[in-house]
Length: 113
Length: 114
Image 1 (tube, each protein chain N blue to C red):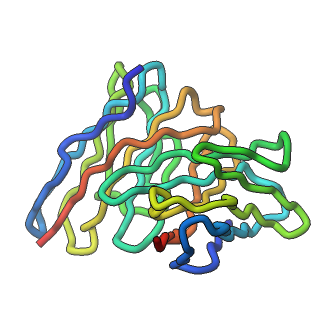
Image 2 (cartoon, helix red, strand yellow):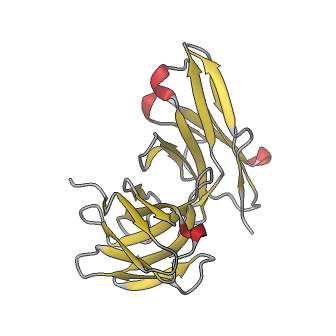
């Protein structure tokens, strides 16, 4: 069984640029969530995708957007990067939106300069 | 808004000593409760979960946690700390439903002294 994978591992961008982060969900999981973990903080929920549609969103501006593909993999896009977007971005998948356990990937470390 | 409080951003214990990491949630409705561990430069690994079955939950690596509704707490314990337990620990809650997102505490960094 393949776990959650994310790419890239690390990324450095300049303020104002755009970035795309990728996530492959665990085999058989159709629900993917994205979290932002700033340094020294707990992860914060960005949004969730279920069967290719956004199915819940946290307190993040519209410049944070996403996609989910038919194979349940997902992308997180961030436009107009700000310095405060520097964080570890975590993807989590679960078997179905009605199940409780979420399995996390290793994360993508984004640095905005 | 629902929240999770982890008392103590940093806990230090000696190897072999009891580990106690505290977690309280703010809700009159019991949520689903989780403890995750994060090693440096890694993602989150699920240690254990409470989903309205037994109130004493056993997890991996010898950890366990007890759900106490009257205290709105879900403290994590381990009888004897090992050097490999040094990591950051996050308590999280979920209220289920179709969204079911996790709400995390700020984390507690556990150090283990030889």
